[in-house]
Image (tube, rainbow over all chains, first blue to last red):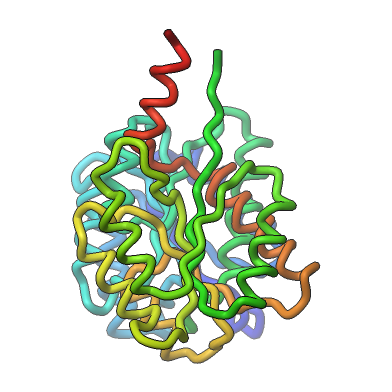
Length: 147
Length: 157
């Protein structure tokens, strides 16, 4: 319980179980004490975020969202659009983590105010290194909102 | 032949000492970069307005923005470019002396893509710039500008 108070909550929105495991493990191995919250769909993520605005003790608000683009149901871009249009949620930085290297996806995500666009690495070790640099930027160098 | 574009980083900073520190730090980074320096938010707005439709302009891939400047402050600048369809996709990272929670919240609400408290020493600036350029130009994909495509097309002839 003591450690939880110091832990940073990162919301991972990712439907692929393999990628969930890889990203969650990489996040938990960081020195800065990350508590990943993993959801498999945009809809579940929105529900969680809404609950976090009502009861932050039971549902800690994330300091960062990592977002897959290609998910069934509500896709990543639709989720991003909704979060950025919500007064209570728009301040949470959202970093897209996807297999897509399409220029139009990249442009659209930045236009929707994504705070980064990362193409998933094919090799797990490489992906872990990417996540290490990502967490270093967001949690060691950039100041985060206290939630 | 592959063409590797030099990234363009716009620095909006009124303090000459900080400008110098930041430029020196950026020169040390492994990503080739061209800094475009504006001494005020107004100067930055003018530059962006004149160049946004140009095919050969040096449009920034990233903006580093001070908050506390005379005239138009950083937050007003951020508000303006994030409501301009031609400019809103450019990531803006705040680089400021302020550690106020209010400034942090407001900046993220205005869609800043990072909030960095200015280090004091050159060494610390270099470390910060290394992390920042690693994140934005090595691990993150960014938008290809029309001017990049022109360069690639010319070199393939």
